[in-house]
Amino acid sequence: MHCYSAAFLLVCIAALVSSQCTPPEGTSYPACGQPLGYFQGHTAYSNGPDYQCTGTSCGGAPLYQCVELVQRVFRASTGVTLWGNAIDLCNYSEYITTNPSVGDVVVFDLFTQWGHTGIVTGFVPGQTVSVFEQNGWQPSGFGLYNWNDVACFLTPGNNNPAPAPAPAPAPAPAPAPNPSPPPSNQPSCFGLEGGYYCGDNQINGNADTLYLCQYGQIVSTRYCFSGCVHAPQGSPDYCRFGFNYVYDPENYEDQPAKCFGEANGYYCGSEVDGDENTLFNCEDNFASIVATCRDGCIENNAGPSYCNDPGLGAPLVAEGPVGEQNTLNYLSFDNGDADTGLFETVSDPRTSGGYSYSEPSFSTESSSEGAQIAPLMFAVLLIACLVL
Image (tube, rainbow, N blue to C red; front, side, top):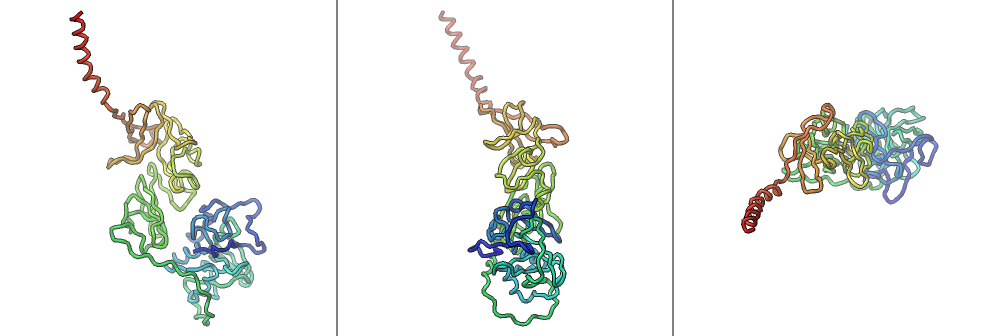
C-alpha cells in the first residue's frame, strides 16, 4: 500500500518546522532500498533521492513508503496487517491507545489529508514524539515531531478500555485479497511471514534457491551456487557464497561487494567496491564470489569483466556448476579456433595462491582425419615413383 494516494505527488515530512523535503546540510538521501537505520530488529529503507517524501515508490509499490515500514513492524508482532494510507490507521479502533510506549505506532495528521506514520522511539508527553520512519525528511530514518500533530497512537497490546464509537470513517482502500493456496507440488509462500526462505524451509521449492516472500506471494528467487543456509528462527535465510562466504542478505554492508544498482553480470572487484583481484557475479543487487583471479581481473565496459590468464591464451569466463559433480564452479575458455574446454576449480584460490585446474579435453576429429589420410598419400607417392 502507498503512504499517500498515487494520484497526487504529496510530501511525507518528518520535521518540526520545515515543509520542504531537503536533507540537513552536509547529508544526502541514500539510493533506493539502502538501509537508513535499525530499531528493535527492524530496518528502515530509503525511498531514493528522487522520490523521498513523495507518494512514488522507488522499489515498486509499496517499497518504500512510510506505511510499509509500519505494516511490516506491526505484522511481525501481531500477525495483523494494517491496511490503508497513514491516516487510515486511526480507523483501527481496537488498537488505539492513549497511553503510548516505545515500539507503538504513531500517526500524524500533517500537511495533507494522507498524513504520515512511524514507530515510537521516545516521547515527552505534551511536547514531542521521536519516531523510527521511512520516506521522511531525515536521511537517518529517525525524526522528531510535535505532540500536537499526533492523530492517534496504536499499540499491539492495547490495555485501554474500548474507546467510544467513532463516526463512520471514510472508506479505506480495499485490502489485497488473500492468495489462494497453490498446488501442493509447487513452491509457495502461502501463510508465511514476509522475508527470505530457502526452498526446503516451508517453501516446497529447490533447496539451493533463496525465495523472497511478500504478502503470501513469491516475488523473487535466486540460485545459491554454494547452497542455501537456514537461519535461526526469526532471522532470514541466506545464500552461502563463494568459498563458504556467508552474509546476511538484508544487510547491504555485509556483502563481499556492492552490487546495488548494477546490471546483472560479472564485475571485477574494482568496479563494485570489492577485492580488485576477485571476479564477482552481480544478480538482483546481490554479490557472489565467482573466482579469485590468478593474474588479475580485467574490467570490460563492453561486456562482462573477466579473469586474466595469459597462460590459457584467452580470458576466463565464469560458468555455474556442471551436472552433479560436487565442485564449487568451473571456468571455461574459447581460444577462437573452436577448441574449448573446462577447467575445474578444486582448491580455494585465497589460500593456494591461484587456480588449481585440470587440463581441458580438446576435439580429436582433425587429428584422426589426418591419421586416415596419411597412408593414402604414401601409396600415391609410391606409385608415382614406380611409374617414373
